Length: 274
Image 1 (cartoon, rainbow, N blue to C red):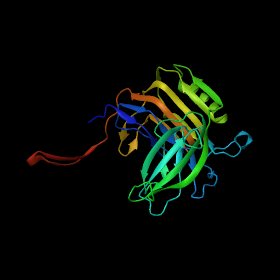
Image 2 (image 1 turned 90 degrees about the vertical axis):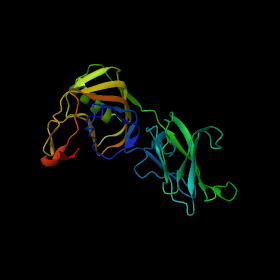
Image 3 (image 1 turned 135 degrees about the horizontal axis):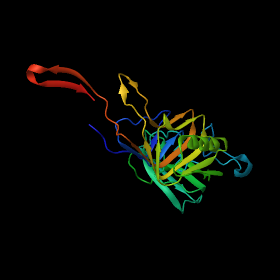
């Protein structure tokens, strides 16, 4: 059994990524520890408890992040059946850029489309069980600002770079964050433990720009242990890291792990775990 294509469209995961049973994996938009903006019922300034990167020198305290698809968070509204979220370029919400409905169990919204760098305003409506606008819908959070930042530094990974060069560029970007790392479009053949391995990094946009990463060193599984496995990405203790526009493939192809648990020879019956 072999999955010939595996797509990650938008994931938020904590620490370690291993793609095992796939010959090809495509990352379109992958975020770890994304920047967040938190609202309150009173409409006070958004919370900044370590989740939002703010440059007080020129943003006057407005929450800001380089993550183009930030998380919008708010407190629960008693009796709400659902929430309506609006993100606009103006405080009067005449130029809405993103909007969506979420259930009352989820006080969180992530816009599907990337927001361009700039200043935005966002608010949340509380919708009652009847869903009506009159009496059933009310402003839950007053309009609040958030700024999407353009990374101040940019680093190019030349086509054909080996792992030593890629690691050097990554570490340079980490030390000068917020930063953007852009791979030149093309095919990279590498044999890494992990193609990208970051620890305690923050505020990076890593754009594959359509690059195909071919991983040639992996040994599958021996017992319960991986044997010289070549992984895609490992992030440890990182915040506000965005990966996008990568395709990973493997030579030779990976295979699914499985074992035969029992065989009944008399009846030609076998049991397996895959």
